[in-house]
Structures are given as C-alpha cells and as structure tokens.
Length: 265
Image (tube, rainbow, N blue to C red):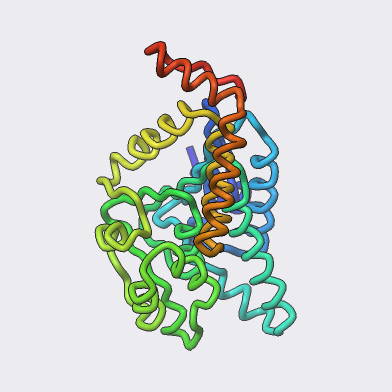
C-alpha cells in the first residue's frame, strides 16, 4: 500500500477521546512550521474547543520528526512587506493568547525540535512533556532576527537571564536543560511520551471542571498584577469557587471518605 500523499491530508488533525482533544500539526516535510494556513486552522480548532464543555484537556503534538520549527520562513520571504508581517505576527499572537484564555488546560507533547515560534508554542502551553531527545531554541538571532514574539512567552516561562541567553545566542538546549529552566514539566524516553502525557490528562480529567477553569483563568490574570491586586483577585476567585456545587461535593466527599461526583461536567 502506498503512503498517503501529504498534500491530500489536513495540515491540522484533531482526534478526541475520553474528553481529551489532540491537535496534531501535520506538515512533517516542513517540520510543522506555522504557516498562515496552520495558524488559521489552529485558531479555529482552539476556538471550537474552548466552547466545547465535553473537552476537558487539550494536547498539541507534531507529526513526523519534529514538534514545530517555528514560522514558515519560505512563505514569509515570498510576502516581504511590513503590512504582511504585522498581520502574520498579530495572527500568531492571537492564537498563542487563545491557549492561555481557553478554560481547558493545554499540554504540549514535544519530540524532535521546537524552535523559534515552535518554542514559543511550548512556552505558552499550560504544561509540557518532552521526549529525552527533544531540543529547543529561539534561533532567529542567527538569521539577523531577534525572536521578539517568542521572548514574551519565554520571559514568562523561565528566568529572565536564562531566556535572554537563549534569545541572544540562538543556541539549542536539550530536554533536561529545558526542564531545569522551567520550559517543560517532564522528560521521558520517546517510547513513554504518550503514556506520560496520558498521566497528566487522566489526572486533570479527574478534577472538577469548574475549579480547573476558574483556577486557570485566575492564575494567568494574577501574574500580570501587583501583589495586592493579585490577592484580591485570588480571594474573589476562591469565594466564587466555594459557592460552586462542585466545591460542596468535593468537601463532602473528602469528609465522607468517598470519591467525588462532579456536577459541573
């Protein structure tokens, strides 16, 4: 049987199972680079999932030998105008923000390379699991282009000096170093990557949907606030969360030593 023609396959594939939606970047010949078309497909998929209460967790993965090599440089060079670049980076920024704003946690499943905007995508996901052989870089500086938009995500995911070192040198770091710097949560052998991702999805799916959604929204909002404002937001969120039916059920189940039955599913 002949292998399927890549040009006939969707550039973004979605598979749903047990409340987990997996989005697979499917441009393996281009190392899953983020073309205009890919950004449109990702935005559409994320918007649809955000409105779908049946989806509890999202996984973003890459087909072929890599997770994501960043923007499609060939496409960018063939559309060399400031207006095009402004539109492209605004489009990409909107998609990245959607990951933070959607109620479901998003997990990056990384193998191979994650470079430039691909590394930015890892940093924007709520959680990240990497194969041992994965490598990360923001290498635009090697091409005369500081990775300004990835720097927004990296500067929030790791220490400033560690982020600046990557941005100024363009050097790769391996998965173990990415974990040490806080870019990824877990590192496992490639053949255990899916199982490790599933451990996280299973754990999250066992929690109250309303608590997860409220907590995620509060967490990112408070990061941009001063300390007093952050505590005010957190206190209000806690009070609202306590009024949710799931919180009452969770506390009762704990005291009665039984498994909770979440109502807000």
